[in-house]
Structures are given as C-alpha cells and as structure tokens.
Length: 611
Image (cartoon, rainbow, N blue to C red; front, side, top):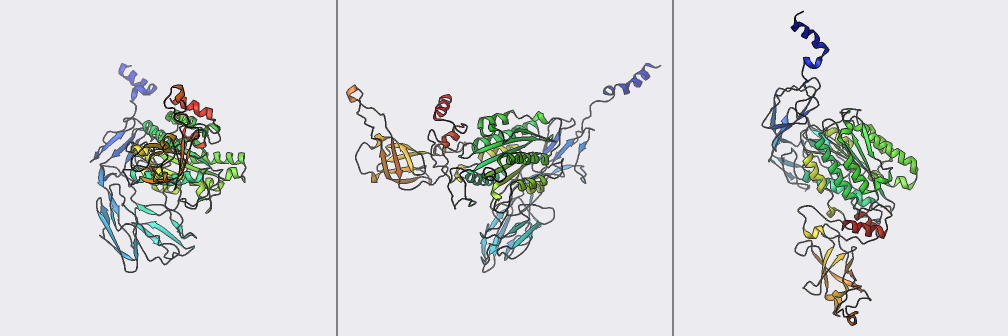
C-alpha cells in the first residue's frame, strides 16, 4: 500500500492528528469601539464589546465562542457588522395638565426637556431634565398636581402610559411602556391610608441603558440604611424613621449574598463580586445590629459557602474568611446561570431556620431578610426565578404589613447582557426606594459598594462609624472629636459618647469660672456642619487632684483626670457627628469585630493585638 494512503487510513483513529482544536473566527471587530476576550479565541471564551461614553454596541454587546468554533448570537439577530451607535433618551408619551418641549421621537445626549403646568396646577419634580450618556434622564419625573385627592398625582414617567385617573383611597393605577422600552418599578400602584402610593415609581428605559455608580450608591445606601435602622436591637420605637416601623428590641437581620460564577463571568470579575460583598459585610457588622450572613455562589448549580444556620455566620472574621476562600473554580463543570436554584437554596435555608425556631415564634417572625444578588446576565437555566421569590415571600408571610421584613436587591453588571425585565421582577418594590440596578462593569460595582452605606443617612446613634473614603475630611474620619472652649479660644478636646454626653479631661475645669460661657463645638467648625452647644451639667471626678503627689516629688499628677459634660441639646447624628464606642458595650463589641458575648478582657486582648 502507498505509505501516504496508509497514513490517511490511520487518521480517523487519531482525531487529534486530523484537526486542530476548534477556535472561533477573528473577524469580530466593532466600528468605533473595542472588544475583549475572556479566554482568547477558544470555546467558552466570551467576547465583550465596548463603546465610548454616549454610545452603545449594536446589534449585540457580547458573544460566546461555542464548542463547534462558531460565535453564538441571540435568536432573530443576524450579525454582519457590529457598530457603536449614539445613545438616545426616550420621549414622553403624554404629560397631564401641562405642556413639554421639544417634541421629538427620542432625544440626543445633552438634549433638554422642559415642563410647564396649566393654571391651577403646581409643578412637582424637575422643570428641566437633560438626557445623560447612559440613556437616562436626570432629575425627577415632572408632575402637575392640584392636591385635590387623598394621594398626590403619581405622574407619568417619560416613555410610560398610565391607565387610571382617580387618586382616592384604594384607587389603583397601572403602567406600561411604549414600544421597545423596558419598565422598571411597579406595574400597578395603590393609594394607601397614609396618602402614599404603594410600590416603586415605574421608569421606562432603553434596553441598553444602565445606571451610573453615583446614582446607585445613594439609592442602594438609603434603602439599606433604613433596613439597618429597622433591625437595630437598641433602637427605641420612633415614628420618624424612613419607613415608620415599630422596632422590636429582638431584631435580627439575615443577609444572603448570591454571587454569579457562571461561564460568562470571568474569574477576575468574580473576585470583584467577592470584594464588593466584603465591603457590605465589613460595614454592616460595624452597626449595632444582630446579623447572620449566608454566602452562596452559583452557576448551573448553587454552592452554599456559609449558612445563616451556622454560628460562624454571626462572626465577621469567619464570614470574611469564607468570602475570601470562595473559589470560581468550584463551578468549572457548570457553565450556565441558574438564578432559580440560587434563590431556592435561600428558601430552603429559611425553611430550615423556621422549623428550628418555630413558625409562630417571635424569634422567627422578627427576623428581617435581605438578599443581594450579583450577576452579569440573565438566567439561562432552571426557568424563571420568580417562583423561588414567590416561595420566599410566602414563607416569610410578606403582606402589606410585613413588606419591610424582606428586601431583595438585584444588581446586574454588564449593561447590555442583563435582562432588565427579570431584574425588575426580582427586586423589591418599595416607595421611595430602588432595588434593581444595572451597572456597566465591575469597576462601577466596586465604586457603588465602597460608598453605598453613607453614615450620613443614619439617624441612629451608632458608635464608632467613621467615613474612611479618600475624600473624607479629618472630622468625618473621627466624627466623635469635639472641642471645648470657655469663650472663643479652644482649651480642650473631648469625645462624644452619646447624642448628649461628652467625655473629656477634668483638668480642663480647674478654674472656678462661670461655665455658662463655655461652649462645646461639634462637627467641623469651619463648615456648615459645625455647631456649638452649651453645657447643661459638668460631672468632674472627685478623685482628681493635680497636686495630690506633690509631697512625693511629683509636681503634677493626672490620675482620675476624667470629666463628663451633658450638653444642653441633643446632637443630630451625621457623617460629621457620631459617638465613639465605650469599652465593654455592645457597640464596642461590634466595632472591634468581636463575637456576641465577648467580655471586657476580650476587648483588652483585641486592643493589644491591634497595637
């Protein structure tokens, strides 16, 4: 036989010799933009397109290299050429009781919309709005209202259509979006006894739109701040809280972190998910609340890294270590995105805890639950995740009176590959709050989680919480610092230990002068945040005597050099004014990241270790 023919006959027995490993075509350039590959041209690699600010990839934002060496594309889309198209903002469909200009089919970035009301109506919201580079209008929905109903006119957001024009108690309104726009927020809202509409204001947005970090951080932070204040076991009943909740001293928070580790998420991005979660954990454990943390990573299947049923879930060190050790490679054999199973594992965890504590016990019913879902795309396995959410709501008995016992935050990363409809369906709907967000990339996610829990949003006297961001002032970093002066010249410093008491030195008050002239300066005196307080009472240590050891050759001795000052008014808590933590207290326990039940000796050991 011809030697060449012999070799050809043997090739089928050695397929590796016959063909090279498949790779996807490299003719994937984008006009006006760039692209990145998660794993070169090999099967499983994700191609992601990027455009300059104010433009978006069209008709696709990313593509997956399939095992057959071909690029996967969405159904019904023929990809011949990918280009960067200009971003445009949607136009109003209607505007009640007023007029708007200009009237265009859609608006370019930088374009303005102006609103005016008819006689007898007052404008609420923004009179002028500008189209931003992310495809979203700045400002707030403009509404012309005459104040004649039980609830205010809920308005019609840009691009939306509303049915229902009665705003009395129990009346309902429904919304849908005009062609090709996606609705986020509540489809239906009801006028409640409080004069507030149920749910979240609906917004109609372009499918390619996304959120800027500077918008997400305060929105997410405000919602979480309300949740944390509501869970604070030392918080007394307070009718002025954002959600007007009657707080129980037995409050507890279960926080569930769900991190996407599917094929379309690179290992580098998964590490950003972990780091972002660490920011949340570190900040939440510094508040005066009882908290347990669950960590679940998922792709085709979920993996429970930590359960709220574990005692370790209450220890910030254990939680941080578990997050750090979570591995992207745990999901190498499962490449899909199964959000349903991830949420169902949360449901199973809740069910087990309910059986352990008892369904009708206060210990179970007073637990508040917060789920943070971090994902880069829509669910492509396991079906719709909504049934899992419905099961969670049922087991927690979430009704109109218990909506504050569950918060689901759905955060998508990668503006064009995330399903807005699915995220909106998963996120909680609460008045004045947002729970569904899409960020352009993981860099934006990091910025959000670093700044989302702004202590200025917290009105409670949570101790030991300073603002450690790069732009924070010295006073914001140590907001418990105060200055004490008899008239105008500073003589001493002290520290806030509550909203009305200051700890300082007894030697500041050696002179018997009229203390009604003294002032305590709280906050930065060189800014609008500074405020002076009179001293209502001074408690000086009776054991302090600077000359008590003069006969021993010690001219001045500062033992027992302690004084307490009661301010004439309470200090309003802010990022510039917050008490320091006292040793051997619950607040200090949390600030030092010590487990519940730690003793004063434990606090001393912690201090020695840090030194």
